[in-house]
Amino acid sequence: IRNGKYTGKIKGKIPFGKNKEFILKEIARREGIELKNSITYADHHKDIHFLEASGIFFAVNPTKKLRKIVPQNQILIWD
Image 1 (cartoon, rainbow, N blue to C red):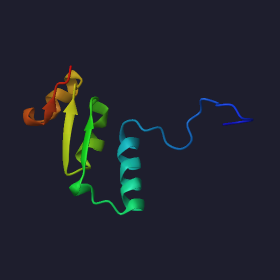
Image 2: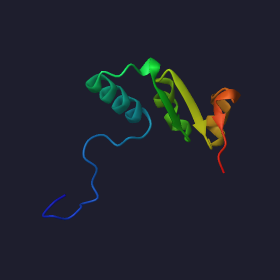
Image 3: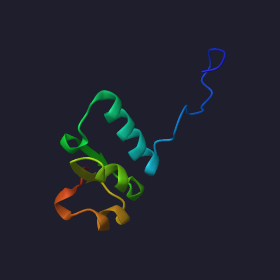
Image 4: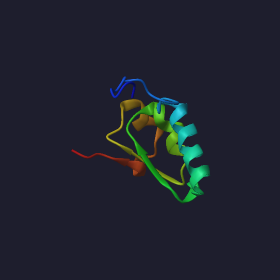
């Protein structure tokens, strides 16, 4: 926000790809959260590192590439 208006610029790291994993780990460290006891979900193959950082993860309406990476029992299709 600059002069009372939104600039559209993101402050900090953009939560995409490996940055999403980094941000997750930073928040977990700061808040004292054990990631092995956490659940994550995502839909894009670039989120695989984010997903694998938690104890349990699901691919929800995944891209074709993510569907190939994630075990079948961890894929959820929601319409």
